[in-house]
Length: 154
Image 1 (tube, rainbow, N blue to C red):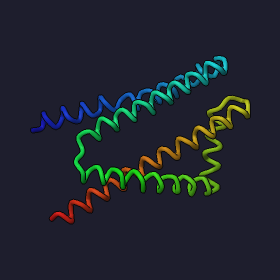
Image 2 (spheres, one colour; image 1 turned 90 degrees about the horizontal axis):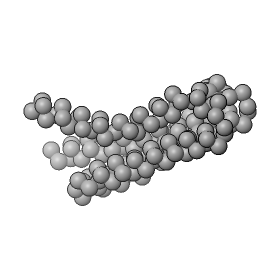
Image 3 (tube, one colour; image 1 turned 30 degrees about the vertical axis):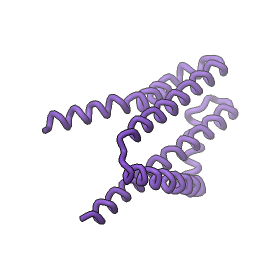
Image 4 (spheres, rainbow, N blue to C red; image 1 turned 180 degrees about the vertical axis):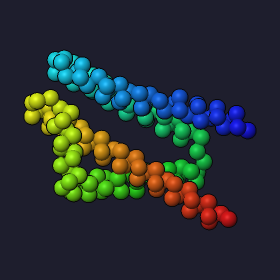
């Protein structure tokens, strides 16, 4: 039984690893990309973002194939409400001055000396914050749905 569970976890980690490896590699290459022409830097950033988004869509379609009607309803419910809650949470985070200042400071420290690059990086960091908070919201609502459904069937 433990071997089967270990294999399942390993297989899941293998499927998810590109979503983690590509952004880590992109941020690790930031010093090298800072020395390259803007066109190459933006092309690499766009390619990395498109790959992660396309691969995430592939993974979600792959997981959704095995869901039954109740699980599909839960997935739709958690997707709808989780994204809404995540978006509102991102707005609240960006309204709190110390947190907004921390985000702006991170963009200034990671960006090059040009203000234009810092603005682009700030927008990117803000977008990533929204997506991460939507992910957390969707996961929390999905967990709540599963717990609620499990208690009602007992």
